[in-house]
Length: 409
Ligand code: HEM
Figure 1 (cartoon, helix red, strand yellow):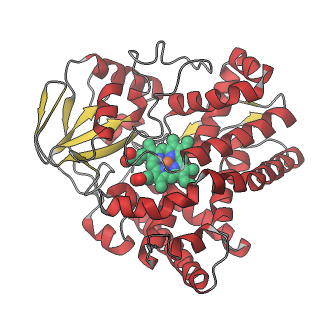
Figure 2: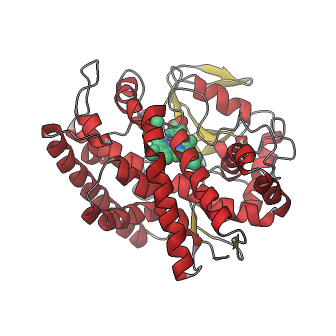
């Protein structure tokens, strides 16, 4: 089988075909190098080594001194002017800049802050299911999965209700841009729309930040623009980039896990029965198994700061490695029978939220909390809910994104 992970056409293959390709790459003794292709609007580099085994993804994630997230963790890399226009996101930074930002934002995701969100999340789930019961089932993504994560982020930031519809629109535009581009004119159109959407989002939150700095409330924006005990706070520009990161990182991922999740539960009735036999006992592991099976983020990249030997491969300073989370999560040496959805398996070492290390997902516990509440509400109030037919997937090398999924209840 011809496999070229640097060719965006690879991501047009079916999930089954891609799964087979990764399975064969996992059997090889050494990580394979893929020369990079020229992609419109994105910087083309020399290429990357594909890390497809679980152990390699974990080793690299842990060692941020050698495996840098700068100049960018995305692959291919955006042109440098993007940073100038939008500022930098923490996901693309190393320490000490990364550590400083992480210190400032981490307190917004503390167990205490998350516990305080529970009743908001529950109320939002109840409202979503009320609406579905009233309107009847059409599309699981727009009616259910897409509504909760963005609602929670907006609630955390206490975004005025009047702005929320606009925010939804801007986020949808940005998501469309993560898909694999079909033609140059379409790429230019999507890139232009994406830039305008991101700028609009940043403007909105910067305005809020200025208001809340003068008159702080108990919300996330106020917390980020007022100093922590070490006297650190976010600048306007940092707040803008962080908001954009939250909307992209925290929205798509949880929504796609839920959309794939309802299909996994439908296709695996015995697993669903087991879950419902003792929801509280099984839901935690069921969510981890969904994240493992789905791997909502397919890849992030690292660049070597010095020479390093990885599994007998001599990597050189400046080389790029790409961490394929979906493949690591199907590594048969760690997860026996990896394609099977099994809510009783030991899922703890999965890398769906990233490998262990400084960039491990900041929102993992929030995502778990949202998904747990949403599935509880769905499965108890609509016990016959199930997906119908196949999902419509976005062609993307980054997001395992479901555009639509029919369902019934
Ligand atoms: C199922 C849901 C989610 C998945 C699968 C997921 C996945 C990931 C992954 C793989 C990374 C690692 C990046 C790297 O190592 O370079 C990451 C980082 C991050 N995630 Fe999530 N994420 C999810 C939900 C969320 C939510 C709900 C939020 C916030 C509202 C969030 C915010 C972030 C942030 C801010 C980072 C960057 C952390 C850093 O660079 O220090 N994520 N996520």
